[in-house]
Length: 330
Image 1 (cartoon, rainbow, N blue to C red):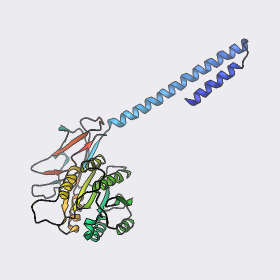
Image 2: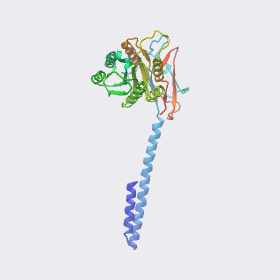
Image 3: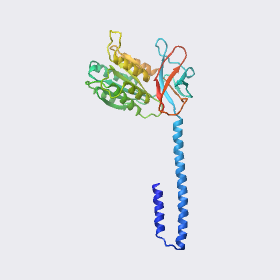
């Protein structure tokens, strides 16, 4: 538009310098016609460009697709790995989902993992175990050709010790640089991890997972438990919690464990107690990740309204399905 305005101003300037004879009138007519033609062509090009942009915007909004990972167990808690797409029914806000666009059992999709370590004063006794177990877990599960991991440590502040990478040497080195001290900002750490994972480029569907090692007793976060869970859901991230709390002889579980169970349940992860054995908890997480299904579908209402949509899967028999509670349509 600026170039076209400059073009018209130039024409006006030339017309001002002309005398009012017949030649001037002739040139005026020619210049007027040229201006009219140019304006018409410019308007047509602008309209085509705007139409193309609006068309692309509309298409992007109409092809919304929901993807999520889930695990299935029988009534004895054993993982079920042989279900087929035809055996499953997905409900989106209690409505039957539209077309299934993707299904994979025992998925091999890329894994984007955030290892989030509590380094507050209350877990000083198990820091060395955390480092050793985390390093072994990454070595067994990270595939350099497709997976990425990020290391985050937190006490009253959150530190990204190592941004997303597939380099095991660099990841292991960052674990050794973690030092204990301070209070506990769990929910802030979950929010940071969610944003870090969401920033990893995706050329195909992937799984985003936070493995959180903590006693669950938050006392310094700037956000709430629910806000942390919502951020994880918006970034399609499941939170697996490994509790460092020692077994209690009392029937009542700790406030921290209750909060962490809710966080894991809402985001489609799992809560694990270690009973003094971090390795066993990490092996269970590893087993679940290797037994996951991933499914994608077109929602019955494909308008990206930004609202929360509840998810539910139904299947044969008395199976239990573990997945995030829903998603934000965007």
